Length: 508
Image 1 (tube, helix red, strand yellow):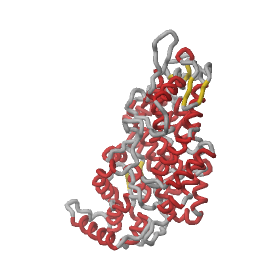
Image 2 (image 1 turned 90 degrees about the vertical axis):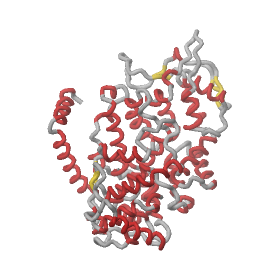
Image 3 (image 1 turned 180 degrees about the vertical axis):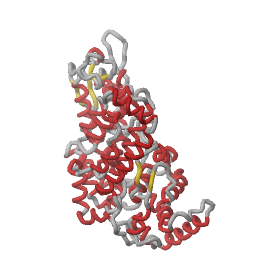
Image 4 (image 1 turned 45 degrees about the horizontal axis):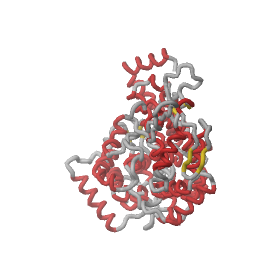
């Protein structure tokens, strides 16, 4: 951006800019409603004891249904909807773009992002991620962006990672989220953010010195990114992999380089001798190509196919993944050379996926985003909208270790009270930086006195059991009589809040 223009915007935001921004948001809200963010006049409500199959697909392959999504998937069919989602460029995302493409820093290269202040970079990256999850019609793409962001986790608080992660998100995660696993790992290996986060930028073996390769990234490449902790590699494989990686670095001060904002290879830092990784010989003299050889060896290893297959099942099917599905996914990974779309077709089209309805506890990010989507909420992801993620322990890009936020339930069970409070605040329009217009939802579900079974079906994809029905009645009465007095919230709104707080909505 032109420096004079940036200074003008800073001045505007310093005095009267808040009103200008609010006005822009109002205009954007109206535009996005005209582009499909409004709530339909009627909403289908699943019944039956089992979660509706289309609802189940939207609950895991998306961040939950937006009002009207369920009817559309039923009209298209699950297979056709999945195929559409696997080709996100064919899906118009203009409404989401109007909200999410306002963040200037996200378009800058790794080196050029240093001109921004850290709080600006952090704020814009988190807001962009949140808004894409809530409003994008390319839902499977955003879900997989989240999956790979965990798989290739980078904590913004380490070193210069905060300056480098926006380009990593753009050029590594988003570029390859539905592409090829080999290409994803190759891009990550030379990402400035990853080179800084896992100390690869200081991996050098200078001739005539006693330098030893830095093994940090090599170990995580084998343990977390490809083969897995029990994948059969040895400490010697880690050392040899580190030798392959030596010489790749990043220096934002390279003034005369053609691409000063990218990682580059220093031959004088590289151990160019022969190497042996996972039983494969790499001849001497390979130079920068040793990295490519290493990536192909690691990504092509049978343990990698099984590790990625298992991890996908953990996220999308079950924490005790069916061996039959893991086997088929591993076979697909090997046969299609890491084609991610082929893996997802197999996974989401499987009987094992369909049979695992309602068994996974939503992590805080999915819980919050699915709540906003179910209500057709209006937010621009201000600080108040993101703060509940911090309170529940899943602040974006803040996990301190390379393994990323866990999928297992145990770490998240302590967030249930926070979820209850959030659900009631959201439907009472007391959640900061979020606006919920409940009347369109209430009208579409039948009016202010929404039957419990109808509201429950809309939010959870199935009918309540008798026990759940009684529990919801008791909870409604307790909320009405509680000290915070929600009388200003319509009855239908109270029901929405209680259902969002229920155990059934916490699962997908």
